[in-house]
Image (cartoon, rainbow, N blue to C red; front, side, top):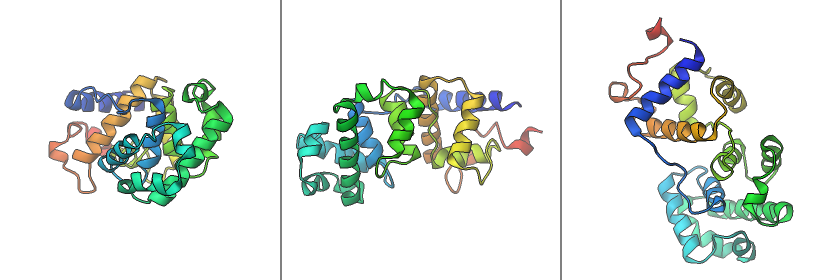
Length: 220
């Protein structure tokens, strides 16, 4: 099966199982960016608690985070882990946003995607997955996000190689899928849910919505 068809077959199988996941849950593009930074090395439930605490203190704006003391932000985001490090990362992102775009996410996201991505990667603590999550989910830009579940699921279906790097996986998927932000949004959410519930380190293949697709050996 050609890669284009296989990627869409996988997508449709996951979507039949999970439906429309409407990811990323947030009240504003800025909240998406905050969540993308906080979710590094932790699970989403911990991030939800941190975001709720930030909102409770009135810290869910660039200006509020910029003016707050580090210890105040750290106390709010303690549940997300590495809270002192993540406080510095939030502060660095807010400084980037204010200096370059007047503190406006809409202004930032009005620029061209690839140059903006390079700028984001220059911000302390923002790596490829975080930058791409901000671009896709906050900016509605057509960029494919790669995470551990993407690598695991596409690797087990022989679409990507075990040693492929982030950029190689991303470009491979974007060559074989339509450049569509809505598709990439749902595809990433589906991969995350499939990875969490079925395609674990010890996979539950018999229960997985992708069980009928199999590996390359199964398809030949």
